[in-house]
Amino acid sequence: MDSSSLVQQGIAALKSNDKATAIRLLTEAIKEDRSNVDAWLYLGAAIDDPSRKRQAFEQVLKLDPGNTKAKNALARLDAAPAPQAVPTAGKSASSAASTGQSLSALAEKIHFSFKLPVHIDGAPDPLTSEYCIEKGRERILQVWEIFRTQNSGGLISAGENATQWDYTFVVGIGVAAIAFSSVFYFIGTLFNGEMFRHFPISIFGVLLLTIFYVVISAGAAVGGFASAVFASEWYLKSQSITVTPSQHRMYLALAFLPFLLTSAVIGLFSNTFGGLLCLGFFTWLIPLAALAFSVYLLMKAFDQVYGGVEQNRGLITSAIAMAAGWFANGIALGIVFGIIKLILTAAFRL
Image (cartoon, rainbow, N blue to C red; front, side):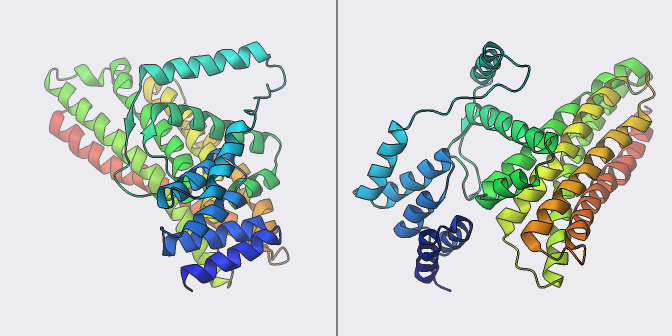
C-alpha cells in the first residue's frame, strides 16, 4: 500500500477517534515516504505526548516552512501550561524539587550532545545528557508505577503511541545499568586478591577481563531483549495474529526493564563483594522474581491486545518472551564469558 493511501486511512481513523490505529497507519506512511507532510501533520494531531507532538509538527515545518496548521499547533503547545509533577505518597514537594535540581546538576556535570550514527524513528536530534537523564527518570518512574499498581492498562497505553526510539531507549536504560554494575567486577578483585596473585601481570589480566565482562554483560542484555522480541512475534504470527512491531516491542521493553535493573543492582553488590558475601542465591532469585511478575503483567496486557484468553494466548506469549530473554541472557553470561574467563585466567595466571 502506498503512502497516500495509508495517510487517508490514518486520517479516517483519527476522525473516528481511533488514535491507536491512526498512529499506526500514519507511522507506516512515514516509513514509506518520510517527506509526506500530511502524514507528519496528522501524526502530530493523533499523538497525546506533548514532546512527540512537537517533534512531528517541527518536522512538518522542516518540509513545509509555511505550513499554517503546524505553526498554529506549535503555538498552542507553547501557550499550554507546563505539567506539574505530582509527588508520590510520602514524598514532599520540596523533596521532589530537590531531586529535579540534583538531576539537572548531574546533567550539567556530564554534559554531552551528539547525533546518533544511525536513523531511529522518533529519536531526538541531537541526543543530549539532559534528555537522557530526564527521560530515563520518567521511564523508570513509569515502570515503577505500572508494577506497583499492577496496571496492565498502563502498559498498554505506553505501547499504543510508541516509536522505534521509545523501546530502544527503554532497553538502553537497562543496558546502561548492567554495564555500569559490571565495571565493579574490577573492584571485586581487590577484595578477593585476584589482582595481586602475580602482580604486575595479573593486573592487566583483570583489566582485560573486566572489559570483556562489561561488553558481554551489555551484549547479553541486548541479546536477551532481541530474543524475547523474536520468539514472541514468531509465536503470535504462527497464531495468525497481526503484530504492530513498535507497540509490541514497547510492551516487552517496559516489562524487561525491571529484570535488567534488578540484575544490575544485584550485580553491583555481587561483583564488588561476591568473594565476601553469600550472594549467589539472591543473584538468581530476585531478578527471576521480577521476570515472573513481568510475565503476569504481560499476560494481562496481551489478553486484552491480542485476545485468545481461552487459548491462554497472553500467558503463552509472555512466558515465551521472558523465557527466551532470560535464556539468551544467561547463555551469553554463563557460557561466553565463562570461556573467556578460563582463557584469560590461564594466560595471566589469575
